[in-house]
Image 1 (tube, rainbow, N blue to C red):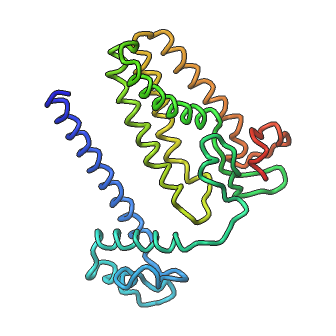
Image 2: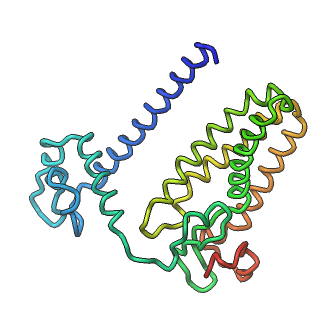
Image 3: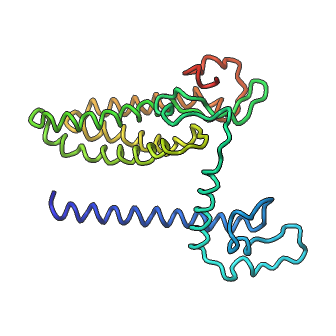
Length: 258
């Protein structure tokens, strides 16, 4: 790697980190602004942040407390620490909880939010997106091992471009495998971030590792978009609570509803 290449990577990483931090704190700034009132239980959030919250039933609200001796950065950090500590104290089981290792191949339960007659709203994976992401991540690591074992048999351009999908595969692993160490009940929607990295990994695998086969690459990506759109409409009744009678035909895995 050249010095310019490494310098470019560092700049890109710094820009990305800055954007992540900015979005993170901006989100909590909106959260603090839109939620000015005390809830039913606020003792866990800390004294400093409690002082900025108002009693909704009071006729004389002192709005200056919202900013008096308050720090957005400190409140955001302390609130996240408090949320994490309380989250880890949840030990009760849940009928729709699933194991982290069941998510990549959709062998766990869905999360049912609403059910009335033939209407259902639930969280479950879109089969095409989940499987393409999982298999792409597995492929990337397998391809990396093969490239190390048989370096002369792999095209130089493909080996050079391997790091691009590999970086997204790393993001997948970094956002997925930490769930293995969490003891509390978990649900399929915790897998949303790894799914995003998985989808990006799939696209970059096709785009970069088929760099010398433009027609095949275009065909695969076009078909992926078509089938993804069809899959979205097929499972959309379970996303938007659309009445439907053919419930079982949409069951990819019976374990979803067990």
